[in-house]
Image 1 (tube, one colour):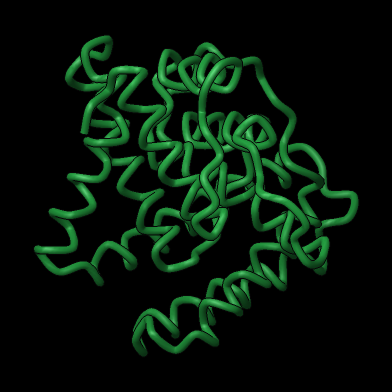
Image 2 (cartoon, one colour):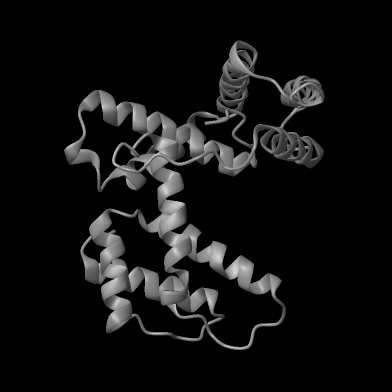
Length: 228
């Protein structure tokens, strides 16, 4: 796939057309400048698509659609998803430090709810279901004592969340056969292609593995247990 702004804008225009049920909204003029700016930042095409999806999902929740969506409306969501992706794959060194997304108790509640939903899906296998049950039980116990936790006790809990997150990802990776693993690596390389030349081999490999983890999370609808 081409990475030039014209190619990038053409792909975005085609995707927007599909999202608008075939109604063509041209990416020209200021809209072309906007989308070209996404390409210049190195935003992977699939990440831009996810940002567009996020806007459409929110728009659909408001009720029946009344008009086709212009790409300009999706800008904030595309940039949000791009920032989330950079943080997930370790490319956020130039980003300002952000506060965690909500309180630790709220984070634990969201994680337990998502784990329960993944468990109810029934497609992960008995071994994985048992792991989810165990992790969810441990997090439920942590939620019961989270209020007022400070200092070393809080840090110990944060470290435990990191360990549980790693355990969940290792089990998720074990579900992939060779073909799925190769496909995930190709997708990760595609996402990172705009950044590869400016990264050391070690940094690229770390980012690649993190991108694979992110793809696996999305595929299996698994939460991030670690609290950053």
